[in-house]
Image (cartoon, rainbow, N blue to C red):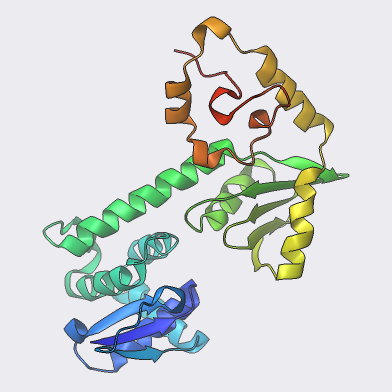
Length: 267
């Protein structure tokens, strides 16, 4: 087996697919992995592929013109996922896509298509949850910052959602897991940035600064709780514990544990 590896980002993955496809070694003999997740064996040959913008653009053009723009969007959406099989899954979906066209996503007789749709749906659900759970706080005059720790690289999706909601504000969404930031200057389009270790260390400190809105938010969730109608199970279902770390309502001094914080979910 020839295993082609690359850096864990979209442009690098497309470059890797371009080189693997052009090798003409047979799709059944090729596998795509991210360099960080490759568990090397003695029986396989590993080939590292550096990022090449020209190769990536060639793949993008081929997908958009020979399959569809919608299919390209679906591939890039799935690429946000954390599952280790995603790079090779995208490669398999491209093989099927060039064979069947845009209807490939409906060919559920293929295991790759079923898994692709499952992962795409999960990423969509995760992004939707964080749109609802995201909490901004003011760190400087008219500068708002939100920290998240998602499983998938969904920051860019959140950027699109909040650009529509807060077009006239300066704000940042910081992904603490992947060290990425969505930066939105006032009345401009947002952009993505991979953070250096020094930048990330500085931005981590921003969460320690509380503003009046954060304090009011905590007080609100403390005062609306109805003791007789507390329903921790419903709360965990609607607001999973792993998503709560950066929500100020779960950081109340009077709270004793995660399960009992912010008792606003009632049955």
